[in-house]
Length: 280
Image (cartoon, rainbow, N blue to C red; front, side, top):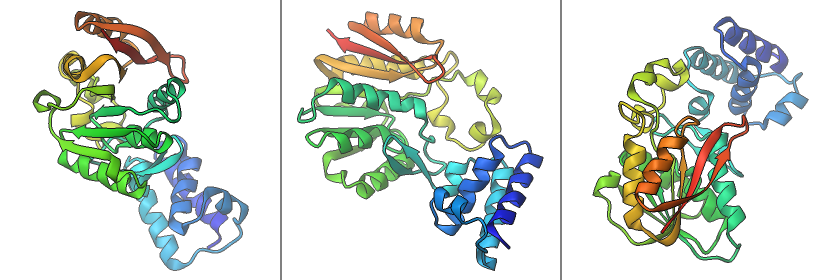
């Protein structure tokens, strides 16, 4: 079967099951099946797939029909300037989280030295992306999930920064470490009652532990802020990713623990997404 026909078949199957971006998803799945870059696939649609390739493609299309996210089917997701291994033990890295990386690189010099703590590291995408750009930085990757820590370790090894990261499998409440120059965190911030309203892709596949922020959505945010007040050096920075409607309350928590709010970063949709603060 020609690649073009196979692609049409996959796209239609996804459309019939109300999958958004059905064409793009089919292209990504077929590219992964063939081990080609998407650009190469689209330039060679008259090529023919063999039986094994056809079988794998159809199997993966069925997974997508069942609302398994493309990133989990492929086992990887692009973030910042590289690709990260992902599975159902970690959240899928999202473009809005790149705001944290972009901001910290913007305010730091290339040859600077910083010790950074990543609370709830997941795949390790934030910390690893920063260490790839700043060769003199070191970091600690903290996560309550041992499985998530294992994914982050695999990514650190793949990106050759394993020797610059200390991995800690612990809840933030039980963690005690050095005084850090920077702390970053994308904590669970969805209130428990809203989990059921998330898309099937998310609520049935991504780890609830990394999504559920308690009955009001602030339990983990508040814990991170309180602990960061003890772990940060004076004038050290805390960068939090939050929901767009959580800025006011998060500001109150930060001020209560002697943080100065520097700015609030907006995502590509123009929504408040990251809050930058300094410890005083």
